[in-house]
Length: 172
View 1 (cartoon, rainbow, N blue to C red):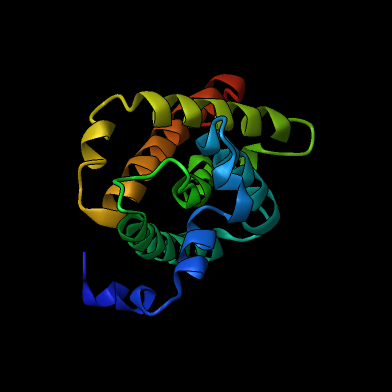
View 2: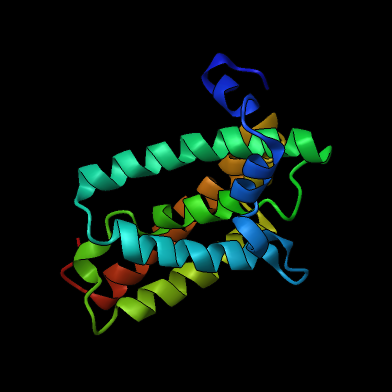
């Protein structure tokens, strides 16, 4: 995909593109690199997203998705493989979408519950790709690499909202 919005990534050296796409050494771990990327995404959410307000979350999310689409698509080209398993930037940037609109229910005593549930549900949806999520992976380049993860994160978000509605009766 040589869309003009992503031409900037073609000017980057391969070592920079691949290091960003694999989150340095983490994508090269033989066992479950997507799970490692998801765990790092939980850290990303906790450190950068949780302190932000809704507008900050939205802007940072959109910026990171834009970067991920460009970098993942270029990494795919340079590795000569479709959606390579070592490319984990997509899981990393998708995780914050799992927690959209849930901050008011996450406080120090139960935040771990939401984080763990979000992590497990995200891995479930990302691995099994139900509800047509697998079709998104067929989109071209970086969009296909990132879109299925965003969809898995949004399915996770829906499930977490249902959990919040069950745990907090005054939710709705």
